[in-house]
Image 1: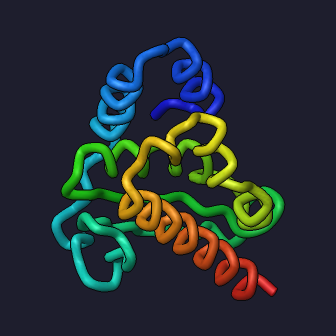
Image 2: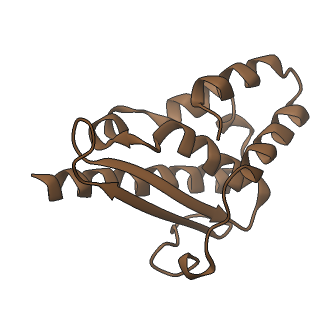
Length: 143
């Protein structure tokens, strides 16, 4: 999976939005398949127009507090790409880092948010909120 800095650099190299969309879809293809058992109501992200599932894994005694990794999937190619970007930003980080990172600002920097439909923007916010809530829960459980 690509690192967030690499994704940002690649975005800056692509001038056309069609190329950027193709790149986002390619990023989505790099996500490992989510097991069928994880495509369930518990893992479903509410507020997304397409189907989105997000699974958080907490390592309670990670470096600097609880560390979180994520698995996810969507039935929409572009949304799978957005998930891949979120995972590049958040997965493998400790809960405090996750809470201190403004994903929406990163998507704005990429120019992505202004090129998403309102429904996809709402879905993106729902995914970020879910990740942040899981990070807060991990911190609370560690206290």
